[in-house]
Image 1: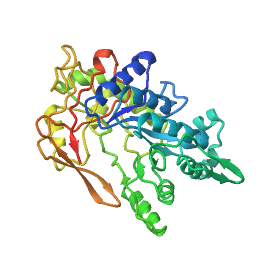
Image 2: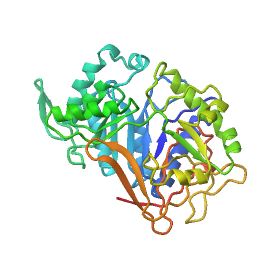
Image 3: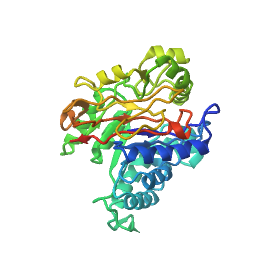
Length: 379
């Protein structure tokens, strides 16, 4: 899975180059079996963090004809729910149902001020907006307080595009259960899963899928032949990601992506949220005891002849993923409904399962945008 937040710090690539490269990555990876791409959302960020995920998702859908796209996460109180439903439905038609949405309440007052939304009332706002959105995206006509609403044309996905609720609080877990949605948290511990499941069952329904990442989960991972070279090249970008995210999450100790590192050396020593590992280490991570469903990687290498995942650049470290053994079982996240989920990977020949994360921080040039993966058979 690739993640795009499109940060463009002063020492990095230009926004023009960054966006062009992101689309090339989506096209190239989508044609080679990438599992999905996620597009993020924040506003008023000095480094140009992606403010318009639906626009980028639409462009990626056009460039990658089979790869699923997800917004992670879209800040619902900043949208008109009916217009959002219309945009979602049109994108559902264009993509053939490949775009899904993690929605969240938002937590930055600056973003609400920027959009003229009431930060103090966001809890009530999102309850009303979510209820309206879920009805509207179905394409069925209905009335709301005397107002006639009918989103057309109809979506290709029955009931409309998939919506998942995101967050990291008990209120978020209860909201997901109350609206019958799957729940993906940024963190918060196993107690959130218990709250989610209890709320769903109290309402007479079985809980859906629930994912609660641990705080030591590697959110961004590179695989390199030479760790020193890789850290010298990528370290400043990873540190920028860490510092920027920490600055808007002061006091937050439960979110998986948070790091307190203040230097590249600290980040490397911490070896937690942002990691660079060797090929052998990555291979061990993909074994049956690995706690993640796949390996999060980012590509910084040149193209390779058919049948090879990544080729080392003559002057740069290579991002590669070793083949998985046939029938490798990779344990996934915990699901309230199904217990410990397991993803079975059938890898005849050169099949690979790869999860990629690209935060947009790497110095993106055309020859670094190529991410090649052979499509795995996953059931």
